Length: 288
Ligand SMILES: NC(=O)c1ccc[n+]([C@@H]2O[C@H](COP(=O)([O-])OP(=O)(O)OC[C@H]3O[C@@H](n4cnc5c(N)ncnc54)[C@H](O)[C@@H]3O)[C@@H](O)[C@H]2O)c1
Image (cartoon, rainbow, N blue to C red; front, side):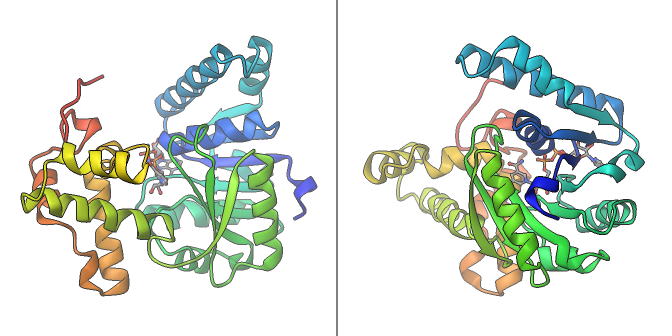
C-alpha cells in the first residue's frame, strides 16, 4: 500500500482516542469509517468531534463550512462489514488483549490483503497482536497521545514482523496528519510510558515518604525542570488506575523491581481516587 493509495481510513472504537483519531484523519481530507458497538457511543464520539472542531473555529483555524465538510467525511456505523473498503485501519478499542485480538482478527478477515492494520494500544505487545492476524508484515503500532487533535506525537511502533514498507507508509501518513511521528521498536511501554511512568511513580513515592507535598513535587518539576505540568497533575489527568496498569505491564514485561507501582498509587486507586475523572486524585476537582 502506497501513501497515495490510502483514501479511506477505518477507525475501530469511537471513545476518547477513537473520536480524536477520526477527527484528525477527516480533518486531513480522508474519508473515515468510524465503527463502535452501539449508536450511543457513536453519537457521543461525533458530538465530541463537533465540539473540538468548534474550538478550532473559535481560534480561526477552521471555517464553519470546513467543519461541515470534515463531519461529512465521517461515516459512523455499528456494522463491522462497513470497514471492508478501508485502505488503512486504526484500532482504538479498550486495552484488553482478548477484545483487541477479536476486533483485529475480524477486521483482518474483512480487509483486502494490501490494507494496513494499526493498533493504538498503549501497552500490549504489538508483535503479539500482529501474530494473531494473517497480515503481520502489514501490521503496525500507531500510538496517538490524548487529546489527539492537540498532541503532536505519534509513536510509530515496529512490531518484530512489520515490513519496512508498512513502517514507512505509516510514518508518512502520520506526517500528512500534521503530526510528529517518532520511530520506536516494540517493547513494554514503548518509549513514552517507559520513561513517563517511572517519573510519576517516583513522584508518588516522594509524597508517600513525606519528602514533599504533591503541590511541592509538581512545583519543583514545573519551575525547576520546565515541565508544563507536574508529574502528579499529569497522573491525575491520565487516571491513577491507568498509571498502575501501565506500571504493572512494565513490571511484568521487564521483570525488574524498579517498575513496581508505588503503594500510595495502589491505595488511592483502591479508594476510588482515580484523578480528574473521579473528582479526586492528588488534587480535588469539580466534576463535569
Ligand atoms: N485514553 C488515553 O489517554 C490513551 C492514550 C493513548 C492510547 N490509548 C489506548 O487507546 C485505546 C482506546 O482507549 P480509549 O481511552 O479511547 O478507550 P475508551 O473506553 O474511551 O473507548 C473505547 C471505545 O471502544 C468501543 N468498543 C468496544 N468494543 C468495540 C468493538 N468490538 N468494536 C468497536 N468499538 C468497540 C467502546 O464502546 C468505546 O467507545 C486503548 O488501547 C488505550 O490503551 C489511550
